[in-house]
Amino acid sequence: MELTGHYLRGEVLDDDTGMDGIPPATFTLRLRRDFGPGWAWVRTAAYGRLDHAGPTEQERPGYGLLDASAGVRLGEKAELSMLGRNLLDEAYLVSPDSRAVLAAGISVLGSLRLRF
Image (cartoon, rainbow, N blue to C red; front, side, top):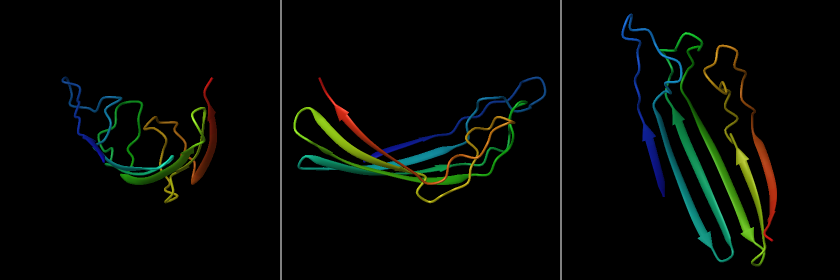
């Protein structure tokens, strides 16, 4: 189990306006399980509302994400894995930048890793 979280604040001292680059409160939980030659994990994250945006940012609502991955080692030299991102198909901005676009919906990535 991996648990993370943070809460940061930042304001311009002259006029109490928000600063660019101060992320909203965030909480994540990841559970991983190894079994034989394989492994799997699931990760959930909650991002708080950004309501004190900096001068080049935009406010955005809070949102939650769910990701999952599984893989198997194929001997000592190879590993096959699958990763699913944004499994709840949440619509959210990829950054607080004033020109940011919505993140991709559900996405799946397969990979084969070879060691030499």
